[in-house]
Every structure is written in structure tokens, then in C-alpha cells.
View (cartoon, rainbow, N blue to C red):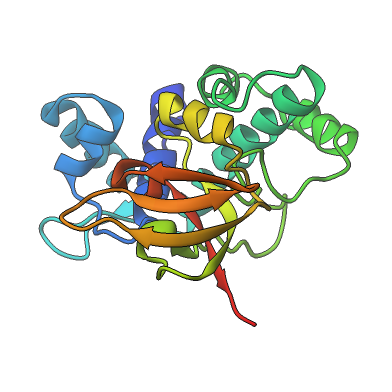
Length: 221
């Protein structure tokens, strides 16, 4: 039985998030994600394996077990509920709620979590468009298409904006790139140049570092 310490919860959430970005989760990628040393990752991975929360399908990849995924989803739920509470109730800017929720998520009791959920009207998504896992039942994490790959001439509805880079998130927010907004992709500059989009009537250049953070779907018709 693994004690659900702050470090354990951080590892489970990081593995979950990495796995749902589509790339195989390795110890090196996990160390980079958490900003810790390789020996620290190896020690925690061993504890998670011993606690039946993690398996290794091959010598390099890491995969949560069913119980490991359930434990990770509990942390993800608390985190995204807290982000929503901070943004809606306390008016914390959307580029700051992630860091605040990182500190608060480990101290949130089940009872307070449910009170926050009820107070907010049982939200389904956080301020960045990330789906909030339900207390019970299935959860779909899907990221949708990336703005970086949307073809010129299309209309693109934003559904999620990655919160991994707070400065980039602040910049995109200043431009009006939020979940629910529809952009027009006008052209892609050659040789790795910016993608030109129209947002609320304004033409703006977005480089790859920004367009890869924006997810949604191309609208047809």
C-alpha cells in the first residue's frame, strides 16, 4: 500500500498528463516534467510499482494501472476544480490559477472538494478548457486537434489551451484566445514563420510555440 503523499500524487498526476498527450511516458520524460533527478524518479517508480499503481509494459515505458489511474484522476479532479474556483470566485487570472492549485490540491479534503463542486454548479471544464473528471464514472480526456495543424482558410473553435507555460497563457489571453472562441486561420508564413489568424476581427501572428498550446476542432460548413 502506497501512502498518498504530496510527492506520490504529483507523480501520478504527471504520469497521467504525459500519457494523455500521446507520447510514451519514460523515466527521462517524467524527470523533465517534474524537474527532479533521474534517481528520484527511479525510486518513486519502484514504490509505485510495489504499490500496484504502475507497471512497465516494456523496459522504458511507464503505464498507470487501473488503480493508479483512479488515484491520478482524484488529484486531477481536485486540481481542476480548484482552478475553476480560484478563477470564478476569487477572480485569479487564468495564467495564475495553475500554480495556486498545485499548492492547494494536496490539502483539499473530500468534503470540501464536494462543497466547492456544488458551489460552482458542478462544472465540467476548468478555465483552460480541461475536462473535470467526475467523482464517479468514466472520464474522457481528449485533446482534439492542434491549431498548429489547422489548414489555412479554416475556422477553428478553441476548446482547450495548455496551462504549462503561464507567460504564453497570459499572452494568448491578452489576444482573446480562450475556450469557446472561434478563430480564422488565414495563412501560414513559410520557413517556420508564424501562423496568421484573425481573432475578433484583429489579424495576429502566432508562432509555433503558441499554436501548439491551442487545441480544438476545425468547423466545417
